[in-house]
Length: 239
Image (cartoon, rainbow, N blue to C red):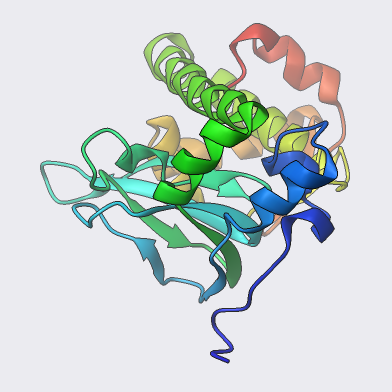
């Protein structure tokens, strides 16, 4: 067997609640087990897929962190999102049967490969799966609206506070601390995503440290005063 491609059963996965529909019976779970073709390892810095590649599958992140990005007109990478374990990447390819962004691993990662033709056929047999797919697509639309609001109307402090609160909230849902996190992305990548220059990101982090809201040691961030960050940003606008 190819060590890069290990079959995995969704029914025994500890991330099932995060990326699969809830309330499935044993028969439905057995069907969904068949949906996952293989498990694939992706080394840090390697691409899961690239802009322009033919779309064939969605990917459930089992371990690790990814960033999605597109090349801007001047050739720079514009980061469009960060994805972590329990989240799905590849939805961008559904519309035109080809990917519209690059997905790159920010650390060694592992994904479950779900061929889209399997998902479509199973969705007809398992209504809960179809509903779950619709919710994922809707969540992506809401997230993009949140990013547009963030970039269009928020100051640098609001953008970074919203980013940190959102990140720690998503990590907490996966069993991690609700106040401490390791930033898998660089400050430059954070700036690209938030529409801020690297210097502005660094300066804003420093201000949060001076205010006593966060503690920063290289990539390790500890949120000391969550309420202070929440006061900076409107909680309804968290992306």
